Amino acid sequence: MTQSYIHGDVAMYDTFIRAAKPFAYRYPIEEAQGAYGTPVAPDNHSAPRYVEMRSAEIADYFFNGLKKNAIDEWYWNYDDTQKIPSVFPSIGFWNIVNGCYGM
Image 1: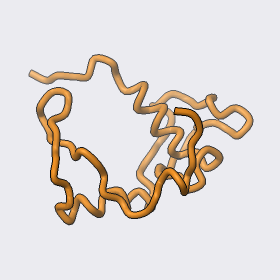
Image 2: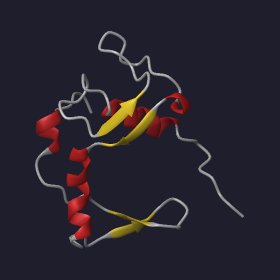
Image 3: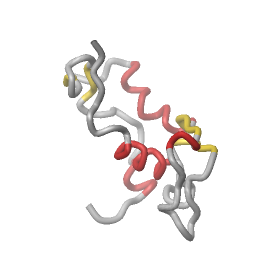
């Protein structure tokens, strides 16, 4: 029996597509191919089935600490099938480099 997340992937897709926009982030952590918006209409992106994405090279910095066993606390995911780290021990200051607004 397989279980699926009932809310789908809409919330995660919006987060990932924003991380791929060079006009939203100074250093995008995703690489996208397809219609993912423009600076004039940033929320005008196409459906997930029309966009190809992969992690950018800079995203590897988030996972370097995981390879060195630097995490003390791990938590179970929503359906108790995998353990996820409590934090990413990344190098640098992500909020200062890419900035953000609001909460």
